[in-house]
Length: 378
Image (cartoon, rainbow, N blue to C red; front, side, top):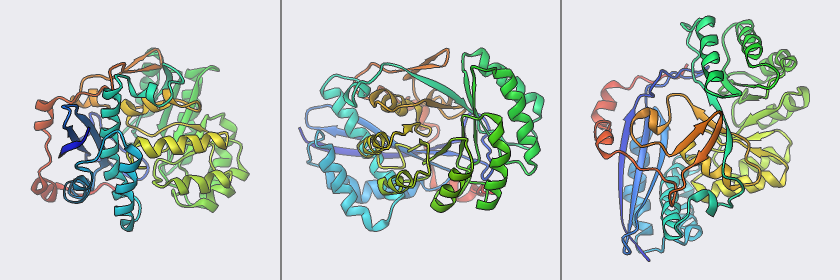
């Protein structure tokens, strides 16, 4: 079997609800979708994504440079394909090139699942057929009253979620602490509360503020520092008891290894789109297992559910409000969540089927982006 053709397209849409965290107010999510055809009439769909910026650059990299390299290759040779793409693009550094490789790699694995007539979680190892899920909201707006937040917590609990993640990083830490305390009261002793800073604090601020959070019984504190501040995470880990979650902003396996060797990370949050697809994500998951750490991948729940069900050290699936394909209206549901338990699609491959008509309405026009993009970084 040979790869005969690759099509690349880019789409941009706002999240289905407003997204704002401690460091950014999101205008749009961009999806770069790759469709790979083979000479055996088996097709695979892959994709990667960006938040606000970079979609056209990634699409151009795939279309003009990477796709031609794999035409004629056997799609079952995922390692050979991945290394061909990585070695050719490595001088770009890490980041955009791995995000581009991810779209191709995910499509390759979709083909593999269809060839073997198995859902991906079984090909990845078939450790389990379901995984606990947590609800994750991105709402740090100054216009969000405490009462509204607590109403949402009630709704999440009513929907069967026992673990909730929300953003902190307000100018007044006392406001964050009040929300944590009141949300924990609603969750009760069996529930878990996770918080996310999106890299808001400096090293000194994190040491002081996390000491305050340490007594609140949180399940984890996520990204309190800049993602590349290894020494800061080492110092913070030594100072607090609350687990630290990190990794959604890292790209290379070597970065994860540095954090694991330093004992600076408790939950590994590698994002399948940012690390170069399934081929590399699985290596990071197994590396984490060797250090006794659980993996909790960032975003992309339609793919993450297969990864978590495939490996032994899967922790929980993140269901980001406003970001699933079903909520965005661009694909039929490929993940079922009932009473806080997620079930992957049993279709061959990843099971995601995009709505072509819905995609047409959000196709990215570079001129529109140039004329409207203002940036949301704080």
